[in-house]
Length: 402
Ligand SMILES: Cc1cc2nc3c(=O)[nH]c(=O)nc-3n(C[C@H](O)[C@H](O)[C@H](O)COP(=O)(O)OP(=O)(O)OC[C@H]3O[C@@H](n4cnc5c(N)ncnc54)[C@H](O)[C@@H]3O)c2cc1C
Image 1: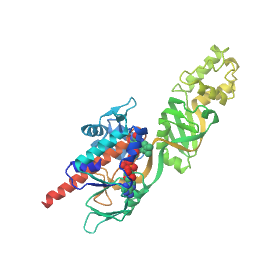
Image 2: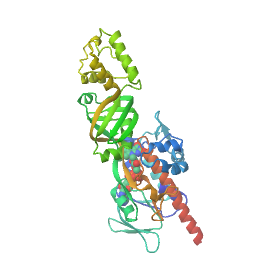
Image 3: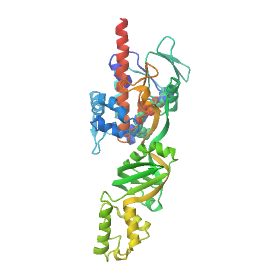
Image 4: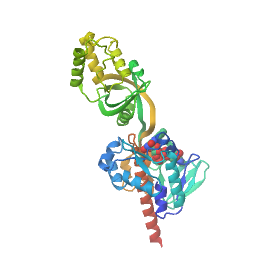
C-alpha cells in the first residue's frame, strides 16, 4: 500500500525488498483463503475499540484513512469488496488471490520494483544522508527514505531497535483457550451465539459476549478470540492460566433461568429431562452434557430433580467455571501483540520520531486488532499515510533542488 501510494504520487525508484520468494504471502493465506480485507465500521471512534493495542492513538490515522477509504482505494483499482452480515468485508470474488492480484497490478502500473529473496540484514543511517541497507547476499542499497513493514518477523524488530526504537515485547494474540471440561469436549463442533465469557487472570478481569465454538480441547470462536486479544498480555504473564466463567443462558439471565427450571419441574414433572429440554437455544447434545455434569441422567424425570442438582444446573447454565489450562491453536487469523512503541512514531505520517526518514507500519508496530478485518485495516491506514508522507517529503525536496 505504501509503495504503491508513493509511486502513484510521482516518486520514482520505489523498491520493495522481500525476504521470501514472493510478496503478500499472508494476504494469500488470510481469512481462510478469502482475505477479510477490512470491516464495515465507519466511525473512527468506534473503530479504535477493536484494537487491544493501538486503540486511542489510532484515532489520528483512522481519521485520515479508514475502512471507507480502503473500500474506495481497492475499488478504484478494480477490486470490489462486499460486506457480510457481521460487517466483515471480502473481495467480491471471495478469493484472497484477487487482493494479491489487485495489489500486484497496481504496483506494476505505478512502476514499483519488487526484489524477492532479499532479506534485509542491516539498516543504518548513511554518512551522506539517507540510509544504507544490506541483504543476506551482502548486496547494498542506498535509499533516501525507508519504510519498515516486516510484520511480526523478529528481524524487523531488530532493525528498528538498532535505529534506536523501543520494542514492546511480542506476545501472541487471537488464540483459542484450552480448558479442563471433559463433558464439554463431547460437544465439540457446537457453536452458540450470545454466550457470556468472564475471564479472571490474576487480579484482572476481561469480559466478552458473542459466538463461542466448543472444540475438543476447550473453547474458540469470535468471542473467545476477542477475549484472548484483550487478555493477551495478562494471560502470557500468568502462563496461560486463569478462570473462565461461561454464561450459556443466551442472555436470559440467572433469574429467568431459575424460573424456567422451576416451571419445568412443575409443568413437565412426568417427562424426562432430555425430552423436555426447556431452553430452545441449547442444542440437545450440550443440554445432555450439562445434565451429566450435575450428575443427572437425561432419562430421569423432571419431578425427580433434587433441589441441589437444580442449583448446580442453574450455576452451570449461568456461570460455569472452567479452569484455563493453556493456549489453544490459533484460529484463521493470528497476530503478534507488541512491537515498536507507538510513542516513538508520528502517527500523522508514520515517520519515526527517533530516526527521521524512517517510516514504520503494519504489525511491526505495537498495534493489533481483533478478528474481522481490523488487522489489515491498520496496515492499509498506516501504509497509505506513510506512502503519502514519503511522497510529500521526496517531491518537496526535489522541487527545492530544481
Ligand atoms: C493465517 C492468518 C490469517 C490472517 N487473516 C487475516 C484477515 O483475514 N484479515 C485481517 O485483517 N488480518 C488477517 N491476518 C493478520 C494479517 O495477516 C496481518 O496483520 C498483516 O499481514 C500484517 O501485515 P504486515 O505488512 O505488517 O506484515 P506481513 O504481512 O507479515 O508482511 C511482512 C513482510 O515482510 C517480509 N519481511 C520480514 N522481515 C524481512 C526482512 N528482514 N527483509 C525483507 N523482508 C522481510 C516478510 O517476509 C513479509 O512478506 C491473518 C494472519 C494470519 C497469520
